[in-house]
Every structure is written in C-alpha cells, then in structure tokens.
Length: 137
Image 1 (cartoon, rainbow, N blue to C red):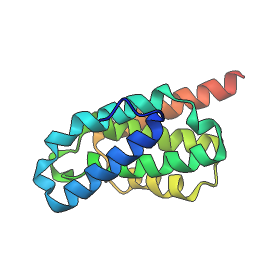
Image 2: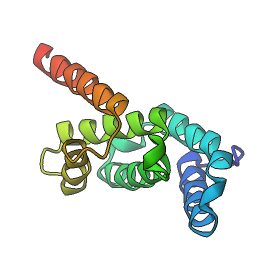
Image 3: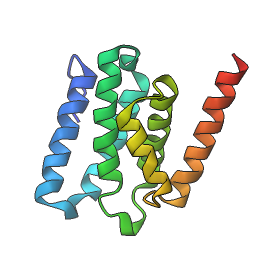
C-alpha cells in the first residue's frame, strides 16, 4: 500500500478497490492481499474520518469491501480477524445510527449463519462493550 499519499483514507480506498478488482479476476490470490487489507484496517482505526457524515458513509463502503475479502472463501471459515473487525464496525454504525440500512443488512447475516463462531463471539463482545459504554455515560 502506498503510505506516501497525502490522504491515507484515499490511498486505502484506492488500494481496496484494486484488491477487489484483482480478486474478481483471480480469486485464488487472496493470501497475497490479506496483509494489505489489515493495513487498511489499521489506517481506518488510526483516523478520525468517520466523525463526519461523509466519513460514516465511506466507512460502510470500506466495511462491505473488507467483509467481502474476509469471506472470499466462506467454507474455509474466512479471515477471522478481518471478519471480526467488520462485525464490530457494523455494530458501532448501528449504535450511532440505528436505522442504517447497510449495517442492519450486514448484521442480519449473523443470524443467517454466515459468520464464523469467532466472529459471532466477537460481535457479542463488541456489542456488550458498546452497550456497556453507552449505559455508563
């Protein structure tokens, strides 16, 4: 990933788009893109771009695309750390916007058995933390 870009979010978006296109043409190359996806997650976690309405919309795009990468091969259980991050982010979006249709659709996959047990446990832990932190305020 190009870390010299002035805007790391734009660079991450371009890199994630490149990964998705590459996987459409050669899905067997998933392993070569996992570390880049993890770097994108670290970039998103380190930024505060989601504090704006535009950033929140962009986050949905990032989560959807990273989730697609995490479950490129769902029969293999997916890439658990990326999947867990996606679940946590969907839950955070739902906490801040309970009517977010994309987040509602994405989290409904938990009950459809699409996510691994580890991702479900992570989602349960994340929702407990989110609910616990909102109750304490």
